[in-house]
Length: 345
Image 1 (cartoon, rainbow, N blue to C red):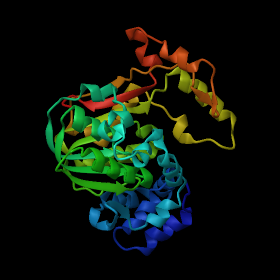
Image 2: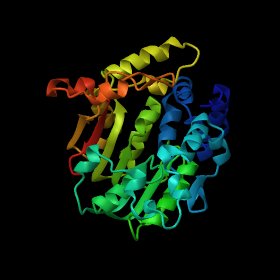
Image 3: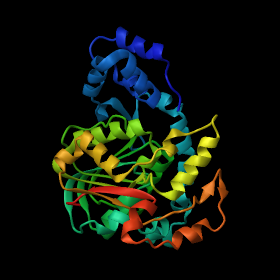
Image 4: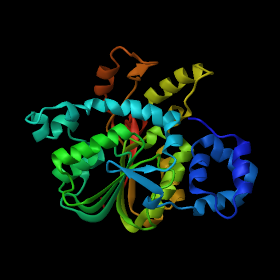
């Protein structure tokens, strides 16, 4: 991801009275490099000011049913945005919904597009009704489709945030075809989620699926604070398969290979977590103060070998990994990742 120069950050600080402009703030927070250097050279005064800056949907522009930040051109210039826009065009074959004929079976049966998610989602309580749902990394709507159709979850307002414009346009197409969360107000936001354009204590249910593992560590921590801010006391959170497991042999092997290339390393995929580290992050964010009864547990996907190394498939890795049936004492070591959720989900 592109970064701003330290001089530019300092210029922002000295040239703006009071709180920094929201669009400048978004640029400062656009990379871990900037966050570290702002903190180091400008001290807690600026960072405490930044923490008090809030945005709302009034700071966005609506086009084709999607909220875009006013500095969308700057967001489009980032490596992260460009990568996920490219991935989003054919993400897990989800473009099929746009290509299918009106009478195609996929238009009648959403599971032909999405399959049925497992993990924590299979445990989700049926027939719940909430006022508001926030989804981080909503993609084309796979999880809300499942929760609406299979778990009969109902809501009045749905907020879906994703950085990929192609995926959000596909979500609107899925809403049109399958009408999940019927009658709800949909607010679809194309942004990177450093700041959430929502009021404090306004969200009943915060969800995310396989997203945090693609976000830098500092940004995850900031995002968890934002989720805590908008989540109502006693609300519900579900972060399914959201953290890579640092003890998993597959990750250890992959980390070793990645570090061999000293000129091109992506720190996002060199960072994994233990259960205790995840609990510490949730506590530091304030989420556990609002949801004191929660669980952090290993996923039921296990791996000894990476599926691919440098894009090259590892022979028999899939068969070997699928054959793993660990004892209870080995589950946490061999699990590919962790989920975290409040016990009232």
